[in-house]
Every structure is written in C-alpha cells, then in structure tokens.
Image (cartoon, rainbow, N blue to C red; front, top):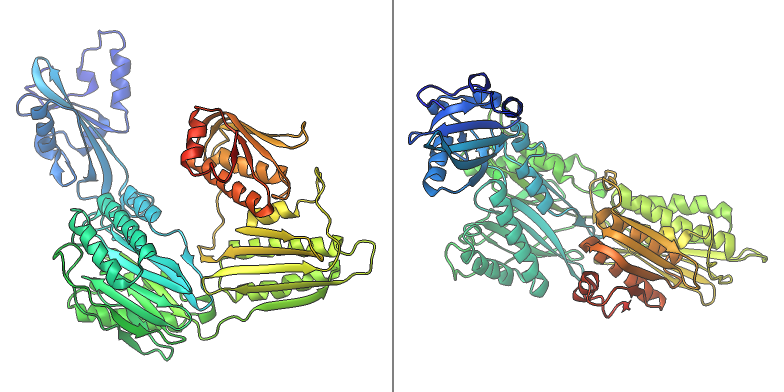
Length: 613
C-alpha cells in the first residue's frame, strides 16, 4: 500500500486476487470500525465505512477509555502483541471494545484496529454493561418481616464515567434481626461494580459469623486494606431488631441515615466519624445505638443523594429530608414505603440539563405501627367453603405487603389443600370441619396449615389428570409437609420477600437434554440424556415432582446419559433430596463411577443426602 496518502477506501485497492473484492466488500460494510495504520507514525492507510464516519485523519481518531486510539495502537506496535481495551468511546458514553493487531503493511510496521461500539443509551442505563453488571449484583429481593417493610432502589448516574459502585443489602440474622447495609465503592463502571460485589460478599460472610456492627466494619476495614479496588469504599452497617426497633450501627466514611418519625419530623442519626474502609487501617470502630419507633421510617442512602443538590452538603441533606418526608407522607404504610419512588424523587431534584452526577442508592426500612395478627378459619369441609377461604386468606395476605407473584402462589397452594380436604376428607360420610391457620414468625417465614379430621388416602401411583395437588403445592411454596394421622394436616411454608411485582419470564431457548419418566418398573425412574443446563434443569424438577406425586412416593433418577451436569441441576437434585428426606425416603441417583457427573454430585455434598449407585 502507498502510505504517503490518506486512508484509502475499498475502491482504491486492487482486486485482482481471487476473493479480494468480496472480502473488501464485507469489511467495508462491517458494523465495527476497521482501520489499517502503517509506518512509525501510524498513519491511517485504509478505513471502512464505519471508521470513516468516526474520522480518518490521524488527529481525528477517537478516544477509548479516555486515551487516544493512536496512543493505544502505539503501545501494541511497541510490544508486538495483540491487545484489547474496553471502555467508553469518546465523550458520548458509548461502551466500546478496541482490538489492536500488529502486522506488516508493505514492509512497514503497522497495526490493524477493530473498534466495536454500542449506542450511548447502552451505557446510560438502557441495558448497557455497567447497568447489567450493577443490577445483577444487587439483591434480587429483600426479606419481608411482620414488623418491618423494606424496599431498595438504585438509580445510576447519567454519565458512564460516574456510574457503578453504589449498593445496598438486607441480611436476615435470625430471631427477628436484620442487617441493613449501604455502601459506595470507589471508581465507576464495571470495575466499581466488581469491587462492590466483593465488598458485599465479604460483608455477608462476616455478618453470618458475628453480626455485631463493630466486628463487621472492622473486618471490612481489614479486607479493604488488602484489596486496592476496595480501599476507600464507604459503608453504613446496622443491626435492627424488628420487634423492638432497637438499632445498633456503625459507619466508615458514610453519611448517617435519615429517620422520618410517624409525625413527619426528620432527624439524622448521630454518628461517630470514621475514615473510609482500608484508608487508615486499625482505626477504632465506634458503635452507636438508637430506637426506631413504631410508624417511623429509616432511610439509608449513598453519597449521590446528598451531592445531587450541589454544594454545600447541608443543602443536600436538607433537601433529602424534605423529599423523603413528602414521599413517605403520601405512601400507604400498610403497603410499605416505596424507596423506588423515593430514589426517583431524589434523583429528580436536579435540573434536567445537568442529569445525575452520581449514583443514588436507597434502602428504606419502615416499622409498622400495627403488626398483622394470625389468621384462623374454621369452616365445614365442603366445596361451598372454598370462596370464603380465598376471600379471607387473600385479604390477610394483602396486609403482609408481599409481592403479587408470591401472594398468588400461596393462594393457589392453600386452595389446592383446602379443595383436597373438601373433596376427599369425609368421602361417604357427613362433612366434618376444616381448620385453616396462617401466621408469620419473627424472621418472616409464613406458615399455613390446612387440617381436617377425616380419613387419610394415600395418592394413587398413577393419578392421571387428577391428584396433582401436592405437585402443584411443592412448585409454589418453599416446603410442604403432609401428615396423615387423625385426619390430614398439610403444612405449607414460604419465606417472605419483597420483589418487584412483575411476571417472571420463562427461560429462553429449548432444552438441551431429554428428560422422560419411565414407569415400566415398580418404581418410576426419571431418565436424562444430554446437557442438563438451566432450561433442562427446570424440566428435570417438574418430572421428578410429577413422578413422585409431589414427593410422596419413591422415585429414582438416572443421569448416566448426562454430558453436562450444571449447578442448576445440582440445585434441583438437592431440593428433591430434601423433599424425600422430609417424606421419609431417599432419592436414588444412578451415575457412572469415575464419571464427571458422579464427581459433581459427590463434591456438592449430595453423597449423604442421596443414594448414588
């Protein structure tokens, strides 16, 4: 190529070599920008259509990750190695990947550049890599306790250069205690999200061993001092007793939470200042105490909520208190305080031309003024009683503030148990009573029992289109226990959590494995062949429950034909093994000795739960 002139187009390049024209046409219309740079000065000598849109003069070449492409190419030329750089393209905020391949161009040293970039919307929050990473690492749900309503929200910064790293979490500690945490990792983008993930994981690990705020913040301080990307992070950590409202807390480099009292007055919790994590190792952690009164709301927030209004910080804190008081006053306490609405309101404090200069993370804990009382229904076990069960149970579940998906699941599961009692308990005799009770313990575990005094009937081995009640129940709640002495008692348990009220989408794609139920022998066998990926694992779960009549009958699993045994499959087998244990039998799993599948089963701790043959 003649490197004395500007970047050439495909029409300038000879096409006498077979296939050259087709190749150049494909490169010309490629979605990525492709440059060929040549000579010690790395002058552009060829560029495709996308590259010409970005600029082909050496001084016009774009920047990636804040550095000129020409500078990055020079580094690849010096090292002689193919290099890849990811970051933001120019000032538009578009996520970009740049691949640099050193090569010889007409005897001169050169570099081939391939630059792939998404749209600016990808990095601003419409599914870009930063938001995808950040959202995936935040908790998908929050615990729901009878005395406390929790909700959390994250609004990312307008600019990709400022987004990522803010996080929150709520960890059940048992005995009605909750760890409430919010923090901010240093930096932005995917690296900040990764640092946040490590910090959150370390927090959970420490809190499960010793949840005392002094111990947790001290341990995180030591952790951050050893991790460059975590050093300098801020965190607030508190332990709240849901029944009494007592709160013990500590912080490192983080602003104190806001308390909005039942009468609308606002205060910020007193806090002993402490340097950010890892910045001054060995700093003493002071633990403070407060009481969250009934009807009061605790608002934990990241720095972005304060800086949103601009300097001075006192103005930001005052504006935050004003917005929080207004949002909480307009919320229905029984429905919980919507921190998503609160975070949006805080983010909306800025004039629209400026956008959000920093992330805003919010975690809200509202202590109810009145705790729902347990439900008890005593009705005749007849079909005409079922509407009353649905009506009373539905109203009681609504008072718990649970998500629509979980509420419907409990309604269907209890409806199946009540329908079984109404249809089968007193067959060929006069209808007797049906007792239904529901309560939530301190840790947010819902227990519903449906009891009758009729005659126990074991399910048929092959119930056909009927007798699927237990199968349905086991798919909708966390645990089902069936007792058949002195009548029938069905106990349903579900750990309550607050999740977005949206439908759960089905897993995409088709199953990579075949899962069938073989009923030719005395005991049904679920046989699997192929790759047990996430989609196939869901099919396996359904078939195991179906073959075992919801776990009440013995079943075997044959995985000798499995080529991939994923972690999703491990979870399914673990869940089925626990159901079998509760029902008094052991799941038999056929896996070849010395094979990968058997090895995965054994290292997953399934050896003691299942009978591996």
